[in-house]
Amino acid sequence: MLLAVENLVKEYRRRWRTTFRLEADFRVEKPEIVGVMGPNGSGKTTLFELITGQNLPSAGRVLCMGQDIHAVKARERDRLAIHYHQSYQVRRFRRYRPDFLLAPAGSSYPMVHLFDEPQFNTQDGYIGFMLDFFRRLRGEGRAVFVCLHPNEGYHLDILREVCERFIFVERGRISLHADWDALVADTAASAYLRKP
Image 1 (spheres, helix red, strand yellow):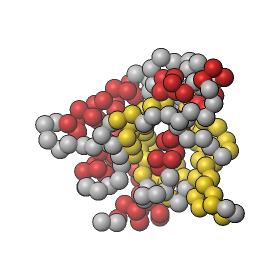
Image 2 (cartoon, helix red, strand yellow):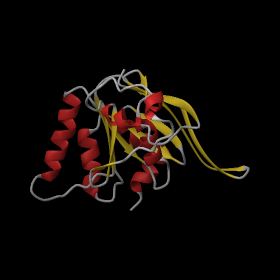
Image 3 (cartoon, one colour):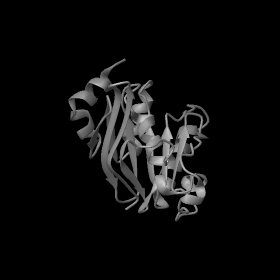
Image 4 (spheres, rainbow, N blue to C red):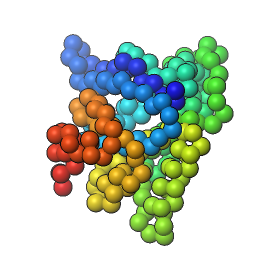
C-alpha cells in the first residue's frame, strides 16, 4: 500500500462556527498517476499538505508506506511524500512536535509525489518532458498526483493523457473517479470543466 488516507478531516473554526471542513478517505494501492481538480478554495492544496504532513489533521490519519506521516520526523517526511507547488519549489514542513519524539522515515526517496498546479511551458518540448517524468516516477513504483486548473484547453489534454484516475474536490468534499469518462459523467465535475 503506497498511500492510505483514512477518515481524514481538516476543520477550520472561527469562534463557534466552522469556516471550512475537508473530508477525505481513499487509498493508492499501486503505482499510478492521479489527476486532481476542483475550484479555487475547494481544499486541494490543504489535502496535499495533509498528505505530506505539513498540515495537522483534525481527525483521521495518512499512512505512507504504512507509516503515519504525522508521526515521522519532520525533516524526513519528504522521503515519503513530497509536495511541489507551482514552479516546482518544494513546500516546507511546519513542526508540531520535536523530531526526537518522532520516528525515522522508512524510505530514502519519496514514494508519493504531489504536483500542485505545475507550470507547463508550451515551447521546446517541455510538456512532453514533464509527462515522461510523471510516467518515469510511476514506472519506479511511485504514486504521482497532478493538480491542474483547466485554464487552457491543453491542460485537460494533459490530464486525460497521463492520469489513470481522478479526484474531484469541491467545498471540502472529495469524489473519486476510476477514469476520465467517470469524471465527466459526474454532474459537479462536468459543470466545473465547462466553465470558461
